Amino acid sequence: MKELPVIQVLCCRPGEATMAPEAAAGLALTFKALGDPTRVAIVNRLAAGECCVCDLTEAFDLSQPTVSHHLKLLRDAGLVESERRGTWSYYRLIPEAIARLRAALA
Amino acid sequence: MKELPVIQVLCCRPGEATMAPEAAAGLALTFKALGDPTRVAIVNRLAAGECCVCDLTEAFDLSQPTVSHHLKLLRDAGLVESERRGTWSYYRLIPEAIARLRAALA
DNA sequence: CCGCTATATTGATGTGCGTCAATGAAGGAG
DNA sequence: CTCCTTCATTGACGCACATCAATATAGCGG
Image 1 (tube, chains in turn brown, purple, yellow, green):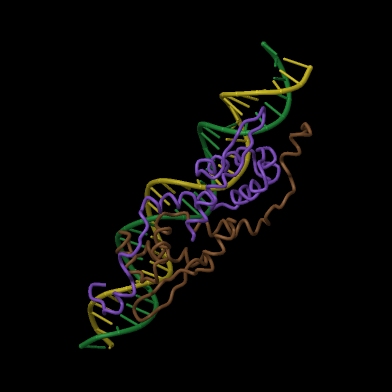
Image 2 (image 1 turned 60 degrees about the vertical axis):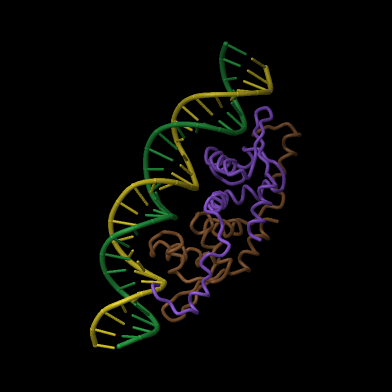
């Protein structure tokens, strides 16, 4: 690493268009929220329309606290939002968040 | 959940266009690989062109084994590929993998 | 007010992950 | 062959996470 032939130095482009560390950290947080099969399935389910917690609990064969936990993570990541209607809490996808992710992969 | 008014049942679309569990698991693996700030930064760096490990080690202020570990995870996730040229190992992005991810977010 | 249901939170537990130091494997220079 | 450099692997450590049981909170119906 100390002394490299010129051709090696050139191929590595040390200071070219690097993303800001905070941007990388923020992106990583969103990706991490999607880094679990259950949460991917939840997002996929919500992509078909809003849904209440009880149906997700029934659909994924997980305990209700576990589903609530995943939904909280997705909400903290800004991927979903929730609204209380009577006894039920309805969760729905935030399309802009998905669009932002897709844009980051361009 | 046992007895719901009809309007609540309808809004939840229980069996509509759900993704296969294996597909969700596979997607989650890829997202998980991107769920770390260092790996996002590495991918961003590789997006500017292939790079050898020593430059990444220098760029991210991490130990060489740690960088190698992250690169292995990215390779296992199918996001990058490596090629040995002499003493150096060069890593580069697999554009199709990124495209696949972006397609999953459509 | 009193139950009943849906959801959220807490605590506990086992597993996985990010990191580094130490070591190993592979290739170039002499 | 011998040293040096690059990279990969192993082992260990601390922390984070996925999960559940138990409990708390909130809203509805009587």
